[in-house]
Length: 475
Image (cartoon, rainbow, N blue to C red; front, side, top):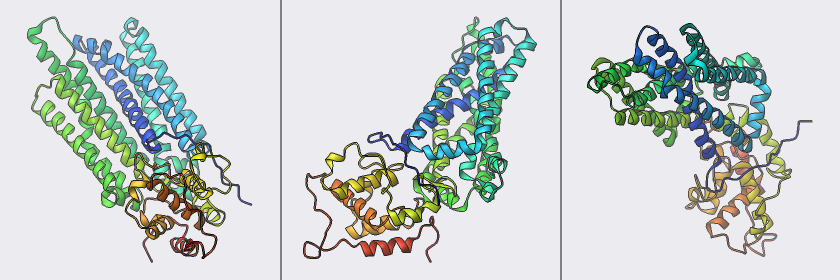
């Protein structure tokens, strides 16, 4: 007998879509964490320059940039905890699957992160009192440990989109070294180096020198050194093309035009990266242009925008799954859909609704539970990505048809994991919400004499036609 389908308690975020909450926290975390990785390597590079007699490089290493790196990995750690806190409220089953499969590798990542924290904090506290060799070793340890933290977490995150041979029983290492492991690792490494260079340009523009007459030239010399760290940005188009080549064809289709929002965000990420790369490579390194704090800040903001857009695309490309081929965005396994079609999506849901009293009929209560179970990971009722706005112009039969054939309505949505009664309950809930949530609502028909019967037979036929598999070409 198969294991029962688990239900988890859920938290609501009001008008904010759950995915939007996770995305907001995640983007900030990724930006800070990648800067901390690149910042450690940049500190190591400038320390080597300083030990060759460059006093300005020494001031840079011992000044604000060191503090920023420390703040970055501390705040990055806090936002990492916030990511855990939010994801277990929204995708507990996804997190559970990832931990079950990669617990020792995740523990290894935590060890490297601990080394990173200890090395970075030790340099902050005692670095000025150490000799040159000890300083280099400590910064080298910090830089290497931070990159190793990226190495391990990258494999786990890449597995979500491209499990590869793991799906065929290849084991944990087949899942870790999956098809998108290397392109995503190298891409993130290039991003980390570029972020460090851009933050350094901002910091260098805040530095003051005793001889104002040569202040501009000394800043420019430091900025050109820092800008060298952004050179890997020229490889990012090739790495992005490599990544697109190894992801599933339907995911590539969403990114390359099948989903307008994802295609737009690809354009944002590519355009912002191109502008940054052109200014750094052509302007700073080749033309030796000066860069003031306003321009440096603008480039950094462009980099934040590119990071945000890239993370949106990475998350969106997994649809309709959170783990490709294994777990839908609804936290339901593909092989469980058939059972839920037979028994109903919420027949065994043990959790009551917080606001059950506001629904005037049992059918609407059921519809609200179906919405909670199958919809609200990606939709709200009236806020972000609101269902009521998406269906406002649909007729009753169009609403029923599009829900029943959900994966054909939008290919990046999973199949509807419920029966005909669930479809009708959800349809009635949406109609009730669009009507302004009145205090009374017609109950389901019990005979032909009361009003036209609910077309459950037709809905069941549509569900059967759609099947329980994810989107594929129409027969």
